[in-house]
Amino acid sequence: MEDIDIRWRKSTYSGGNGGECVEVGMRPSQAVPVLVRDTKDRSGPVLRFGSAAWRRFAAEVKGQR
Image 1 (cartoon, helix red, strand yellow):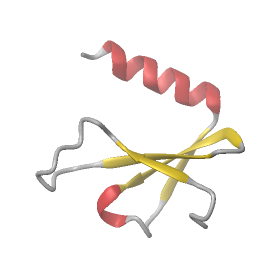
Image 2 (cartoon, rainbow, N blue to C red):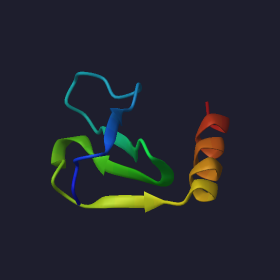
Image 3 (cartoon, helix red, strand yellow):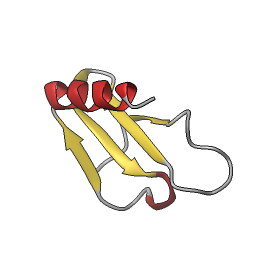
Image 4 (cartoon, rainbow, N blue to C red):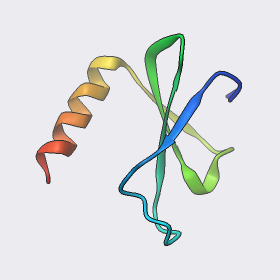
């Protein structure tokens, strides 16, 4: 996957302790798909979510606080 136009953001819950971290990426010109990768393995696999699936996932995570 090319990272040229993808803006990656690291989770605010990812501390600087080297633990399990994820980054979420989007291309500025499009909101779909939402991309997720492991911060420690940036050249590794990337998960892709459609906008509806991402909203459901985010709602579930927010409900777990």
